[in-house]
Length: 390
Image (cartoon, rainbow, N blue to C red; front, side):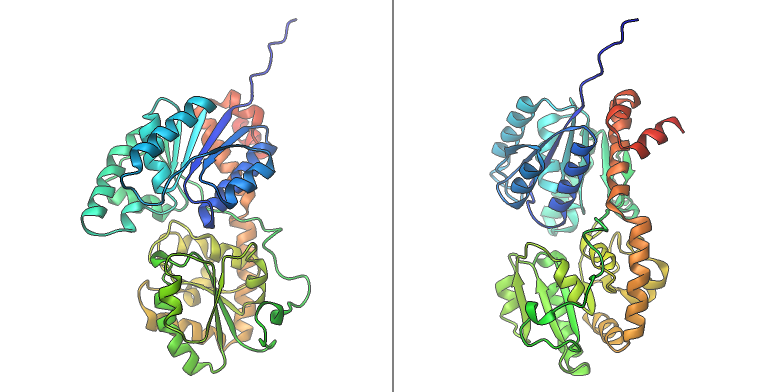
């Protein structure tokens, strides 16, 4: 009996403007998993670290020249996205973050199954007329996404409450719990920060230096922390447009700039903090908890869902409240036993709820829903194949 030839592996195009930070890490992890599962994967993004990483993984690459903010360059960016799509001819377009979501949906206009993943809503990042225009676009553009993929239930609820009518899926962010893990041996903190003793309290903030991540509130809070915990040190790990303004405030804060690997900083920290003004679900706290470190975060979208209940009472503070942030940091710096307990609980929670494999398998299921189970079954991870038949 003649056996039909197997269907070719589906081709997915990831379109993204950020080439570093959390969005880029998600794209890289999806690319890695989808290549391993048999997908043909192409990434379109500007030049930078992400382009180099996905090329090394074996994915196809198209350089897509795009700026972070909308403006006069948008028509050219849409035309560039159209050219990439016409060349790649993907079965699925996965557009990540606001700019790719804008240009990608305008380029496709529903002709190809399109997944839009906001990674935090664009209208939260701006104010006034710009915010109103961004929201108006998100309400209109939702019709051109076969699925709007949120990284937390809170992010979905924020969009729905803002009047966005979409076909929703929620896939929480995940991290590689093998790479992000507790130190196998005592960390040489002095190698990271000369003169830092093993007992010097160290707080680390990993994130792009920008208004979203709230490092300005952290520096305000740090003035109080330093008075209450003499000798405590703060390291801001990352780079961004606000670096010069933040550095001008002084306060004996270490600015590391961009780092190739944040894991040594997580492992060296007594406490990791991220005082964001808005998020979908931030990766840095997940990475820190996977490394066994306690965290303090602001109560923005995704924060409560990312934390085990035992941590919420100690880890959550209101956004934009430096006084509350200082109290939480001070209380945890004063209690090493509590920090160790919260770090262990956080690690266990990330392994059970936010392992990167959970994320990539759930995204495969979203693609399968769009492509049809028969084709998706051939390339999906084993866990997803089982779910098709369950």
